[in-house]
Length: 91
Image (cartoon, rainbow, N blue to C red; front, side):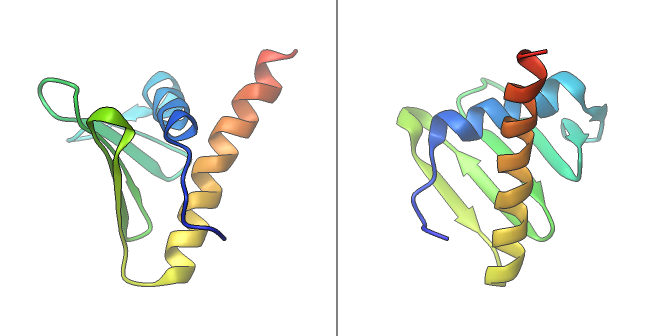
């Protein structure tokens, strides 16, 4: 899996979680991915499976994880959120 992430896709996944998710202490959670923002909305966070993804201003991002397999499964979940959304929109 390559390390270049697509910020537009990450933000689309964030929108899916915020739209369909259940409330948590920090934001919303959907399909095992938790989404939250800071108070001004400039910083967006996606987390789950011991992985935290911070998406900042100007489409910068920072991915924190302890193990590569956790990162990969988390990114697959994030990817699936966006893929499922595209499929849903076409029905």
